[in-house]
Amino acid sequence: MLSIGAGSPDNRREHPLKGKKVYIPPMAYGSGRAFASVFRAIGVDADIVPPSDDRTRELGSRYTSGDECYPAKVTVGDFMKLLDQPDIDPEKVLLFMPTADGPCRFGQYAPYLKQILVANGYDQTEIISPTSDNSYEGLGEMAGQFVRTGWRGLIAADILQKMLLLYRPHEVQKGTVDAAYQECLNDLCGTIERSPTTPPAQLRAFHASLVRCRDRFHAVPIHRDASMPLIGVVGEIFCRLNTFSNDDLVRRLEEYGGQAWLSDLTEWIWYTNTENFRKLRLHGRLISKDGLMAWIRKRVQQRDEHVLLEPFKEDFAGYEEPDIYEVLALAEPYLPPDGVMGEMVLNVGKAIYLAKHGADGIIDISPFTCMNGIVSEAIYPRISKDLGGIPIRNFYFDGTQSDLDRDLGVYIELARSYQRRKKWKRQ
Ligand code: SF4
Image (cartoon, rainbow, N blue to C red; front, side, top):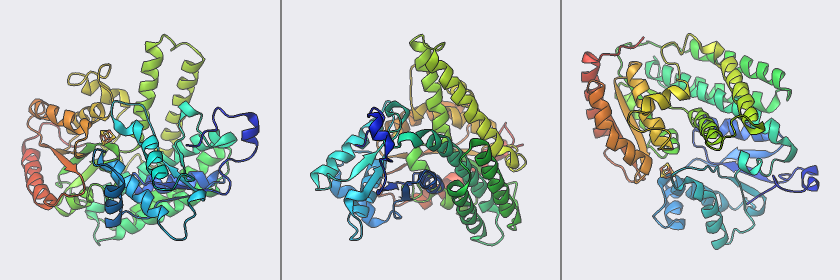
């Protein structure tokens, strides 16, 4: 794997990714595209991998052992499909594979992917996994700009996804909101790539792009139906956001007359910030240079988010995302955050938040055998009982699901029934 963070100053003089192209697996389509633009903004060629399809599953199964989680299988399948293309030079390909600490298998997937590549003759293909722990390897002197632009790009992509899900269920003419969303993504990605690099000017450019996007959504004719059941969607981050992995569950939910409130991608970044602070506290280093840097980073992130959300105050009224500490506090009676880590804490806390903000049901999307989904599922009956019987349903995916339509049809009826008697009304 590429490593430049600990490299010599000489390493940093030449851009280490020059001549290569980064390929990103789109966890969420919009965030993936925005992230590719963030690479391009620092002069690195990048794109999302070609759309997943049956061949993705076929190659994912061929190159994995069967013990891996479904997101790993999809990602490996997409990467191997890419490398299989005749016009691709494996030496010039950089596969983007995020990594993280945590209680599950995710942290193992970058080294595991490397093993697969080497075993199948792609040893010249490199993997890039930039994190703060490895000083954003491979990015050299551009790391600072990459991190700031990346954060802004991901917030903006989350905002556009939220607008898509707020508007699409109510569109008068099918396809018009998707079309507006695509235009907005093009606008955002162009802005990311072309806007000035100085932080204040860049923030103004992102804000202006989002104002244009908001106005595009506003221009789409809709007929808002306030009685439509609102379904909170939580779960494992890749599977809930990657429409191929979850058989486009949200769109199918909309076809059954529901509206989704989907947990976004930046929720995980806020969570990793809290983990960082927890570890600093644990080691008595809250008052230290690292503690100060973490605090400054958080304040900058909060300010960026505040500025970019400002044009959407009215659209998001009643649908505001919670502060991450509120999510953890809500989860605490069921899963104390000091003893339990990872997405199960977020799923439980967010499910309660969504229920208390008017959701008529909660769906948890998880890969089959995902430990986060299994733990959450064990706790949901108690949460449902404590919240007046809100229907909470786990949907597991491994690429073989076939009765999703039947299950969603039954589920939406349960949500309608709860809607009539629920305690927490929507604003
Ligand atoms: S969260 Fe679940 S699916 Fe994702 S890597 Fe961990 S165990 Fe696997």
